Length: 178
Image 1 (tube, helix red, strand yellow):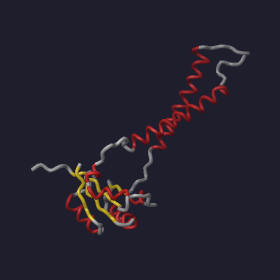
Image 2: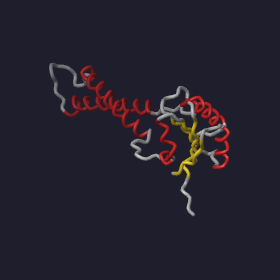
Image 3: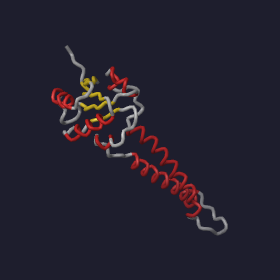
């Protein structure tokens, strides 16, 4: 008999405070690859599951710098190298005239990189997620709160993790198949 690989073990809770306390205890127990699902945002939950890294800001900064440099260098090349035209005795490299386009391309590239970075870092589009294999997960958008410990966590052990989650007194515990 072939068994499907396990994506993780998920516990269901009735209240947001129970989920918050469970997330705190799970993180303190040494589990690092965990996630929580709730029908509304819960203040402090992201910190309790160890989510502190936000790389989108760095992606936007890099995109903005690339946009600003490309706008400025394109105008410089056109005015100085490609098509130098002396108009009224002004210098070929007249940087004050380049500011508007440089600013606009900085904003454009920053905005586009924000969108693409957010999609890439969130793993979107994702039409299928393994947690949808658990029938009770349908209540996550109504009035239930879920905490999952991924099987890729270094501390994960099927029996030990289930025993730990049972100590948190959840409503139910489910294995999430991949």
